[in-house]
Amino acid sequence: MLVNLKTVLSLAETGGYAIPAFNVYNMETVMGAVKAAEELRAPVILQVYPRLMNEEAGYYLSPVILAAAKKATVPVCFHLDHGPSELETTRAIRCGATGIMLDGSTLPFEENIALTRRVVDTCSYLDIQVEGELGHIGSTSDKEQDEFTTPEDAKTFIEKTGVACLAVAVGTAHGRYKKPPKLDIERIKAIRRATDGAPLVLHGGSGVPDEEIKKGVAAGVRKMNFATDICYAFLDSCQEELQRPDRAIAIDNFMKRPIEAVKEFCMTRIKLVAADGKV
Ligand code: 13P
Image (cartoon, rainbow, N blue to C red; front, side, top):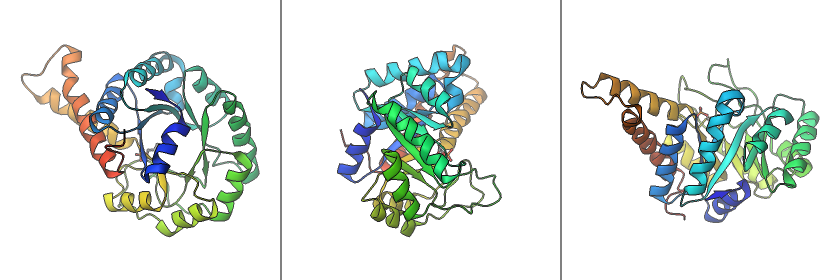
């Protein structure tokens, strides 16, 4: 069933686990992620980058996600990932998103607050909740991550914006890590304490050691993002398929194993964040 961000976050908060948020790119990755969630009875977030809601991909991918979510036997939230401005967040709402991320993390603090607050206000009329970002979570190809979210700023940001959850900079980055990252668990705990237990979001989940993710969830991470590793699961399987002498040529048949590979990967992450068996 299609649900909003608040619904899945409150399930996670009550149960003390994290909702896996899988970035999807095409029909096959949507199918793999939803099959995994259904098989393991887990609530799940399917999220897309803004570029996938623009022009052609926007016409095709959003209806696929909505159809899959509505048909699913578990709660599925359709979320915009890293919306940079009101143009993208409005477009996402028109595409049917039930959760919105406004990423103003590269803006000065007060501007991030003002922009995020405006989006929270607009979304509130539609019963859609917003994820904010404070402390820029960069890419693994950046020189070094030197920006970390402070508990004091997180408290002020949440109070002034009314976000439903907050993406924090605590040692992760997007992409493939050169060396496995170590999370600043004490910082996660301190942010939770300062914000009266606000649901926290960890970006850059691909390649973070399992033990670190478990500690992060125990400390208060309630939404855990995975994107890069979904791409690899899908593409590696496509490549393997192409090597098989008896491979299918009909594309729907060819895609069966790559869909299965995405499903298998998503199942490992659902179990890791302890979202399995929750619905
Ligand atoms: P990865 O691509 O590193 O898994 O990050 C996913 C993410 O945080 C999407 O916003």
